[in-house]
Length: 205
Image (cartoon, rainbow, N blue to C red; front, top):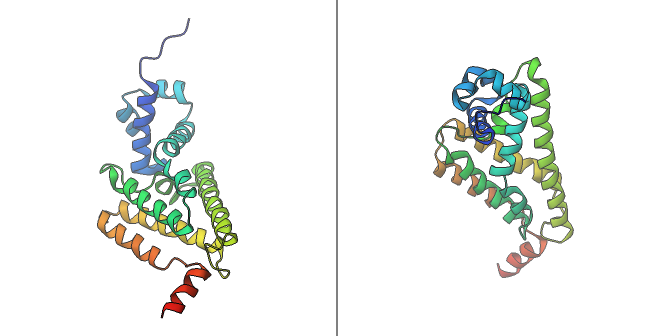
């Protein structure tokens, strides 16, 4: 009969998630992971496989527990409400935990050696999937008349991702929540209005 595990796998995974969130994939050493989880390296290997598999499990947990606002955003009535929900929810997440600010995905994506290319590629794929969801939502908004005929859903999706990523970097660099909210307000102030809304404003002027 094999030995029973002497640690809580879920708690260990949560602790590893915080390390990866703070330091990125390559910045997180096994010493960091064992210290944070209170679990020795052989036991971590036994429970999660190698470091890459542990990171993969942590990334899944991050999306499940911390990015659950994304599906909610996609259900908003207008494209601007989608963008607003994403921006303000991201600001909250990026600044909520003093010990690990910013975005786990972006912290792991910005730099990496050739040995970590498979991890980097997974993060790229995850980001691309998110952008595709926003593009499809904005295509629907354009078809419904919520966005003007001149709108480019692919560019809007890329723009939203660029602002989200920029704010995550700024949060990691210590920018205040108030500053990030001002950035979000500026981004939303330039969001394209529907042709009907533009016509209505023109008729009132």
